[in-house]
Length: 335
Image 1: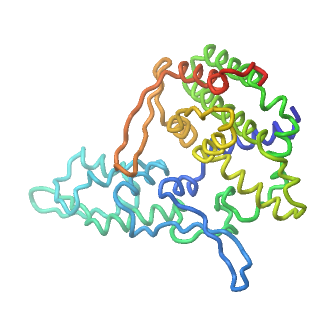
Image 2 (image 1 turned 90 degrees about the vertical axis):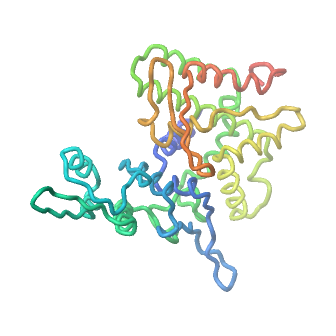
Image 3 (image 1 turned 135 degrees about the vertical axis):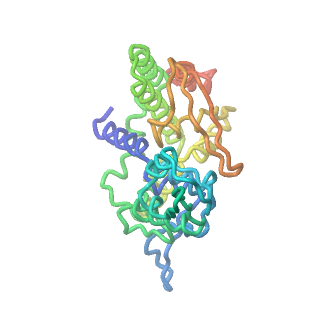
């Protein structure tokens, strides 16, 4: 396998492990890029229209507070309550971000000191300041911003952009072969069994998901026509490649592409645990490990609930190892 391809994969895996705040919000709010177009029809750049803070509900606020590592549940807040100052209350207030601490007022009489909780509007203004200070985007974010998610840009500025498609095809013997994929997963499983470090175990599990995704992308690409021969127009070729890359890096779109290209072979995509993969990729410290068991949280915006799930990591690793052979039961290991 070429070193340039290995570098590209390493770079993609690093991006997977450090999902940006902007990217997290795109997923949370189900946002899509829009294109700024001039009166002449020329496409200038893409932008993402993030919701204004005034439209945030309590679940949105709690979700983002957790993203910026400031756990806070606005649903449990006692708006405009008057409470006697105790050591327990003081500890609670001291644990809050400074912007929220400053919203409390105090009143003392001869008998006791009272703490007056802020109104909902006062608290939301403080939280808005926190979000602004932590670079939470509101309104349109254009691609000329350094924080704009790379994969949603209209124009790519990475010189190595072309490598995914061309080199995956060139190195197809290494990227497509089931036996080589299985060997990689067996190596990951061996490393997993030899480690007692929870973070290393979780990292190896995430690496297994990344390896699985790379294998499936390569399998899909091997079924595609040579993208460089579709048209002689280099700009149109680039646009096609950009659109395909976006689809290949999205779970559901990758699944749809796989089923489309393998339909004639009567092979159907077998789901992997995308919620587990996303939990590890978004915040690898959050899932908790006990032996081989890993407990992680899945937030459902539709139901406005958080569900805890527990899996056996070794079982997941073995399932990922067997994933391609289950996909291609009638193929030999080099197929």
